[in-house]
Amino acid sequence: MKVDIKVEDRTYECELIERVGDNVKIMIDGEVLEADIQNITPNIYSFLFNNKSLDVEVQDGTKNKEFIVNAMMERFETTIIDAEAKYQMARGNGAGGEDENAISSPMPGQVVKILVKEGDQVKAGDTVVIVSAMKMESEYKVKQDRKIIEVCVAEGDNIDTNQPLIIVE
Image 1 (cartoon, helix red, strand yellow):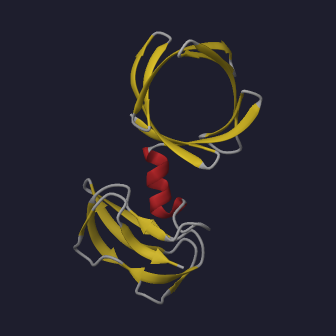
Image 2 (image 1 turned 45 degrees about the vertical axis):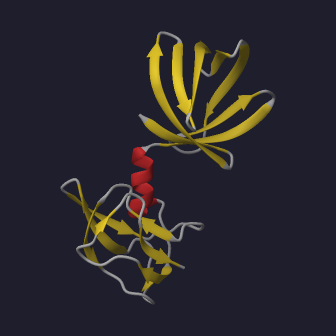
């Protein structure tokens, strides 16, 4: 299973390739790494890779899938961005936030209905587009009050993963 892991301001694409006992093989941004991982206490892990040992403390963050990682005398804010998180962001539970100007679908599908036009003012929670993907219809909403800058698709269009559907101000 692939997930993105955001550490501070950098995002890494990660995939667990194999796990046998304490030995794991993972791919991070296309590079395969092998490590032995020991759980020392409920929050402390010991990693051994490339003949080097690293002890890491993991604490729960303020939200689900957010963690504080303490390693090498430094503190790192870490977020796991899995398929569910990407889906929620694209549906509006993250789309249209402060730094997000494009509403997109996390999977390919077909545009069923567009509920806005360029120049429209929309309120937080308003549905702007409906997409059918994998035999399910999903409503995509804005998270904050916004102005529609561009409608990038038309009803009936087939769309690709992460293709911008609506651009907001």
